[in-house]
Structures are given as structure tokens and as C-alpha cells.
Image (tube, rainbow, N blue to C red; front, side, top):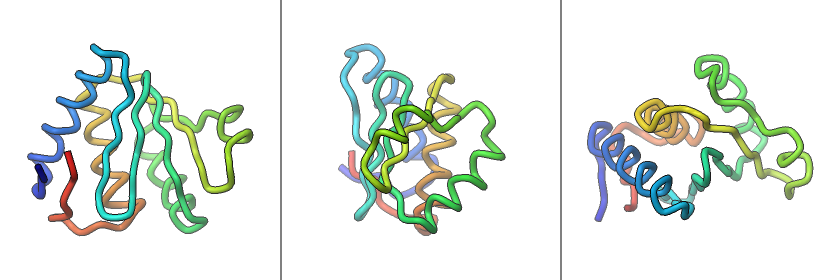
Amino acid sequence: MTDDSPGDRKRSFVRRILEARRTEEPVIFEARDAAIEYDDRSLRLELTAGERDRLEALLEAYHVFKIEQPATRKADDGVVYLSAVTDAKHAADFLEALFREVYGFEEHYELQT
């Protein structure tokens, strides 16, 4: 199933985040060649240098999300871990912004669910 409108995607993000919290199993959000893993209020991203710069700018607007320094330093090049200790709706807004602003997807990108 695919979601291709911002509202549909945000509803899917919220639903899947709540499900992941309930089952204590990670969930992966995929669109084209980008994937974001949500696990226990943490996000795992794979980013290019340019995407990393855009992430830094995005984090200025979403203060509750922080780079997990120990995990990121120990990770492979290009892998960034973020703490995501927030409600599911705010996390969904951030995930949408990641796909749009960091990965550069247009408004009607398809989220694979």
C-alpha cells in the first residue's frame, strides 16, 4: 500500500509509530531509495554529506530531536541516529519534514507502508 499525500503519510507515520511502541518492534519507513528506521523513540538515517547539512538545518526547527552522539560516532559513515522522545504526531511531522526537506522529495512522493 502507498500513501502519496502529506495527510495520508502523516496518518501512516502515527499509526506505525504507535504500533512500534506497542509491539516494541522497529518499523522502517521507505520512499524510493530512502529509508528511516524508528525503534524505541530513536531514528536511524543514512545520509549523504549534503543531506546531513540539511538535517542540521531541520534540527534547528525541531528542537526535541537530537543527534545521539555516542551511537552516531560508532556507526558506519553516513549513518546518523536521532533521539525521538516525543508524541507520535510530532514525530510524524518530523518524519514528513525529513523526507521532504532532507531527502528532497516532492509533495506527492509515495511512502511504502
